[in-house]
Image 1 (cartoon, rainbow, N blue to C red):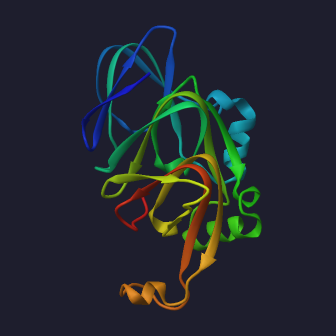
Image 2 (spheres, rainbow, N blue to C red):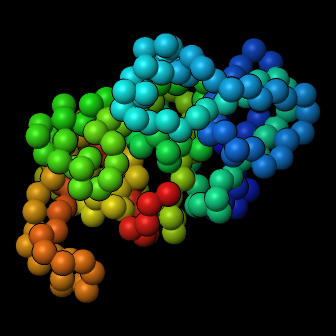
Length: 216
């Protein structure tokens, strides 16, 4: 179910009979046709275990199921929206950044410590993001939110990408992450003090970076 970008802060999706999609509650701006919106209590396509995983992860972002026949416009908080199309791969994204996504995608939860070991867990503590992250896998479209717009940076074995953890939005592909310290990095640009951290992503894939260090 592709999204049509109306502008940088609004997208439109076509809902067809027999298909469903999920969105963050409160993200519907307007709709046309016979469309229903119901609270989702089954954890999306990942089922009840996905729901339990998100609760354990303290990812309490509520979802709603969107069904029927018509078109729906989505947006939330005036945030910029980036549409990501998955072709059988997995997207790793913080739950509160999800605006809407295809119901065909399988939703799950991954413990960040399994990517980057202890450093993955440290990332959660330093950035204020959970130790778990949401995964969406399959063929379909995902609309994510960010501050100030998003840029997609390719990751290759020869060219790992270093990202300010506060600017990280999501990534996909065969990618590993680890947190490294960079003494004085923040001080050089006049923000913060003491030790700074960089999120290093290596492998094959892409990372999405927002043009801000603000949380949603």
